[in-house]
Length: 168
Image (cartoon, rainbow, N blue to C red; front, top):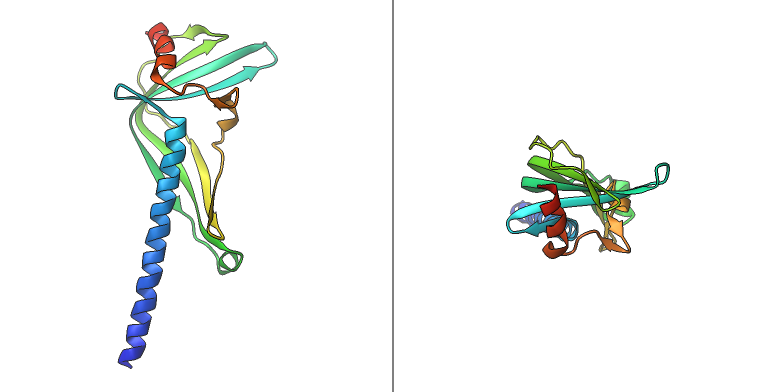
């Protein structure tokens, strides 16, 4: 009977270690993705996306400044069938912030200065999954708007400085 309990305990510990390890991996993958999207300059964090309006023929850039942001990565329940199909982990990563403000540019010209600070009720998130040992990272809902010429809009603070100065 004691052997049976030891085997069960060993299996439970192995499962817990595997689950915790995969959760840590998911959090690491999510952090990597968010680091490629968010830009930190002098202690300030920016999130930016661009959209082309074909009706009015202009390029709009929305620059969002975040305060006290956090990244939350949550696992979803995996069914027995999904496990049989090689799915090891499924979940979502969310960006949360206590406060934000936004400014808007059209065709490179400032059209709205910084808004007042407000509660940021954004639902920016993306899906993650580990299938047969390989991580698959989804797109943000608005990710198609973040790209410009195959890269994110601002890769360094020098590019961003000019727009931030204009928006003051």
